[in-house]
Amino acid sequence: MANIFCRSPFIIQINETNQIETKIELFIWNGSGSAPASPTYTISKLIPSTSNRETLYNISPYLREFITHAEFENNYNVGNDTLNTNEWCNVSVKRYKKLTTSFTQVGTTTTYKVFDGYTNYTSGYNYDLGDILLDEGTYHFEYDANATLSTDTLKRAGSITWNATSGYKVKYTELVTGTTNTVTIPSSGVISSYRVHPNYYDNGCLTQITDASNNVLWEATFKPVVECKYTPMVIDFINRYGAWQREFFFKASKNTVNTTNTTYNLLQSNLYNFDTLEGQRKVFNTVMLESVTCNSDWRDDDYAEVIRQLVMSERVLLNNRPVRVVTNSVELQKQINTKMINYAIDFEYSTDINNTVV
Image 1 (cartoon, rainbow, N blue to C red):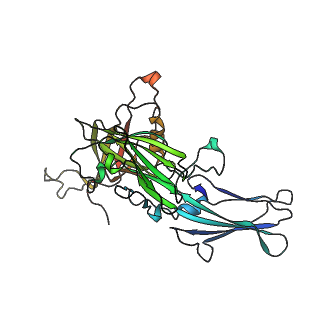
Image 2 (tube, rainbow, N blue to C red):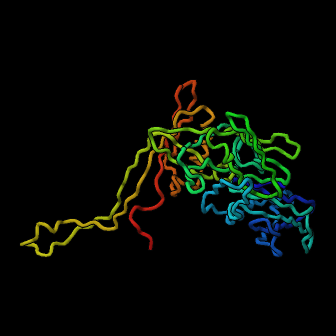
Image 3 (tube, rainbow, N blue to C red):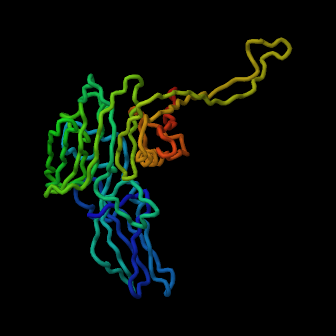
């Protein structure tokens, strides 16, 4: 089954000989159940002209309505945990043409998995990023010998979201001893697998996803870091694939508060014998916002892609609190130029410090 990454347009084309009008039916649903009996949306178009009968439909905006990212999917102790169904959806598309007075279906019904990701312009239209929703590479996580991973969710290394096929495997190889542990996927579906096997938390591991014949389809290395001086900041964000990705910024962080308010001029209660403690101006609607600057630690050139996806993300949590990325311009550093690469990113918490919810 193909995938749609609906932060980018996904185009449905109908271009049949002698067509005068077209329509599409979208059947959208969450989870692994069946498609709805009636179409969720029906959209039709007249042809532009008899010399140009092609019609195009961008279905991505209709699909994004069905995806939300309420909380970070942080799998720890289940090898193949079913992903929250609101994190993705399915769509079946039926295409129709009208030659005279009635519509007839064009081709067969096509079904897609839909994720809240985006593709690059250079990849062209309707590009499929694949089933594994995390880039290959080397990742670092905070190691804390005193952590209780069953309850300390911010100490976990994070998860891998992927559209799994029954019989595929996740193989974990401990980085020091070479010990391996393999989890076989019992049924197909969108799942969350732990990045680091719980038994290999101390030393990290090489994690590989293979097919049923043990051919490696994807791999990444996850290494523990002991930060002795600073308190690492845990950043969870929706990456370019539309899945949660966990990153740790290990070095110094700086918190800043900023207030906004409204001021008005006060009419003195007694103009010829006024109270000097009363003042001439008053403030109201005072709101305080907090922002944080985080530093990544020393990284290699490949970390530029993580930063690119982080600043593009529309859903970010910092230590499990919602934030927005304030930094809108970042130099993507190279070791040949900079030698020591560190990224400083500014975040602003998405809530007021004082409760203003009404």
